[in-house]
Length: 42
Image (cartoon, rainbow, N blue to C red; front, side, top):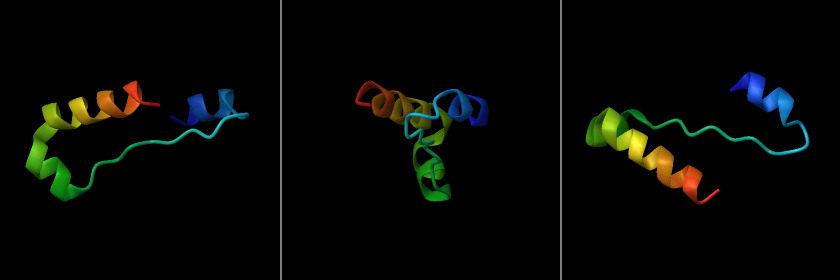
């Protein structure tokens, strides 16, 4: 992430970090799907 952020200094780079509750509710597979949805709409 930090390497990408350095390379894209002209842009605002954000990182999605799921909370404990979200991780517990959706699991790793669900988090991966949420991440893909966020990326698809970026």
